[in-house]
Image (cartoon, rainbow, N blue to C red; front, top):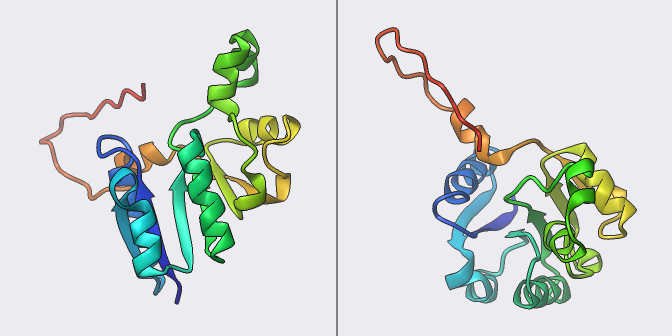
Length: 166
């Protein structure tokens, strides 16, 4: 059993996904806890001393510093990207600065044990651009939509449900 801290970035988008992930990990016998990234990331690692941390995308100097410290302390670091990235054709049309925001500004691969991305195409882009080695990336699908499809069935008296994934 591993002690795992999942750091959620936004309550609107990420919290439901992170709570679902924590429950799945608990069901497998792990001690999984969800903490808010902005308010409790370093404190959680210092005081709870997890074996693993699931962190949001490394998109700032502070996040880079955090994953470096976790790595130095011997904590396994998993980065879960909250957004899809971009398709190759769309990325090619973006200006270079916007591409950096999507693909990443920092060399964080040495400090991350596993990166979770939505799709294989974006995983390939990260590998091609030298952001992460192929053996450290897993394409898992769109996490934010899991909560829409993996939920208890609710009867709406014959009404259909229409999902807009924007």
